[in-house]
Image 1 (cartoon, each protein chain N blue to C red):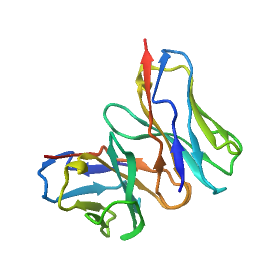
Image 2: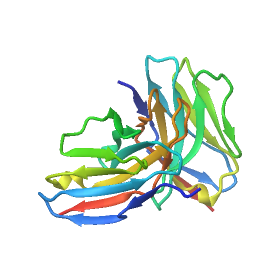
Image 3: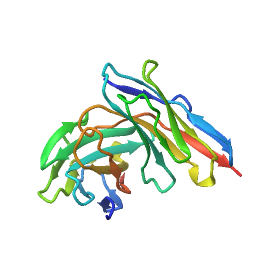
Image 4: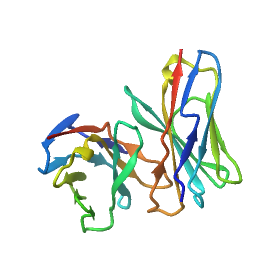
Length: 113
Length: 113
């Protein structure tokens, strides 16, 4: 079974600085998708970024970018120019077929002003 | 387009009762997935419905069931409630296709007393 591991329960970053959240996963598949979701205190899950495993190019969405290392099964999220509104729980997720997401345990991100 | 809606937003039930939660997907989306979120177990996949058929199922007891209607709205039912069923129940909708993005609703907070 696929597993997703987020080894950082909590991270802090100063406003305007850069922070990287780590994620590793385990799969024997070669074609799959990886996601980062953000869950603010409102509990609404918001899709931050998506990466297709068959693409070597790292996905970017404005201030958010990923470092996808397929051989190492690593998928980290970099947030640049951190803002107070970035404070949330961040979940890394894996999906192979259908729409079943396998989530990591999450990383709480705190942003200091 | 309107987002994913879930009703009710909050529910309080007692042990042994049953409960029905509803999810209306984004217009045009035919896939609805359900997840349970608890502090102890994190986010866990319950099941996915596509075109009124259950396409995937997580590792939950038979007390958890669901269905999908012809308009793609979905309901999940939990019978004989236990204290451990207290959780945030999230549904997500998506169009079909291997890379389709999933969009989450605000969730239903179920408390079992």
